Amino acid sequence: MHDMDARRIIEALRSGVASRAVGSYFTEARPKLMERMDKELKMTSRESKSHGMIIKGRYGEGKTHLLNTVISMAHAENMVVSMIPLSKEIPMSKLHQVYQRLMQNTYLPNRNQPGFMDQVDARLKDSEFASDLMLFVNTELPRNRIAWLLKAYMKEERIEDKIKMQADFEGDFLSDAAIKKYYRTNYKTPAKFTETFVKTKHTMDYFRFISYLFERMGYKGWVILFDEAELTGRISNKKQRMLAYENMAQFLIDPVLNSAFSLFAFTASYDDDVIEGKHEFDILEELYPDNSEPIQTVLNMILKAPSLIPLSNKEIHDILEGIIELHGQGYGWNPGIDADLLACRISGAGYLLRTKLRAAIEYLDQRFQYGDDSDIQSGTLDEEDLVSLDEIDED
Image: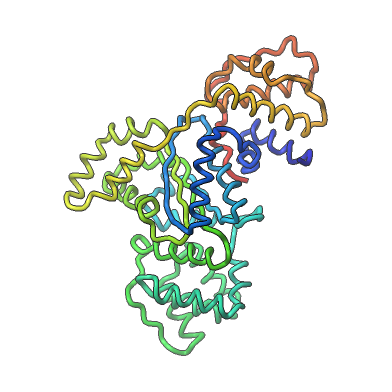
């Protein structure tokens, strides 16, 4: 590893700056869970199966670190990855907003910057590729909006209008009237929509199109990662909260996407705080007396989801060895510290993974600056001063 790459990872761990590089480096922790993730990705990439799963973990135990590791594993399988944290501003109940944010955070393999439309434009020059896309949008989608948009986009030569249509594919949806105008301008004939597009209801059409697009571009699948899914529980309106679960079901239960793997990360306390605390099953029965199965399945999936257990002493030892090596590479020195000694030095730093990592780097920083560690002591850091490895999630 290049010295600057090593320093970048250490700086990210110390300061809390989001970094996918952290997840790509520490890939050996929790081997059993990583083995399962590997199987899930291979099921998608090699068998072209779409499916989803849920994981849970306590705050600070490395959920986002795990997601970042999945990104590296997926890219190694030649899969496209999109990852976002859910929030009050981007809730799962508003799928059109989720789609737009995902498009802004979509990474093709071997690319450091998000985005994919430049690659689509290059491929559209291939008549067979363009014909396959048109066949899909004309035969596989319930509404023909994307078909008219795609056909107009392929012929449009005016840069400003092309950018507007490109933005539509990325979630900044145009009005139906605007698409009809672009089509008429390019083909001199009217476009007739089978149904008015309503973004709050029909955004899954775009998810389906994008999943096929990635597959047709030669990628082995699309990995969609939803971090901080527990914020779904903060949706105060119970109907909107049920809608969020219903939208999750479209990714988790028999998804209609092409070769897609969706993963939701919840905090471990969601079971007690939200599902039990807000009586989600009672609300479900109240609001969906005749068709509650998809939401009920999602709630049960959350309850039964595998949890991130605290790292074993060996796993912590291995991570500390990696941090020692990275610190030495990044700052050009030989720490000369055994991982077991470092583990002892940070033993009073709390039980959460994030706390241990921050304390370890703080200790190495002081050794690097002052040499003599006789006065260096480890203590419990204040909660507000800590940055979770969960928060170190993207470049």
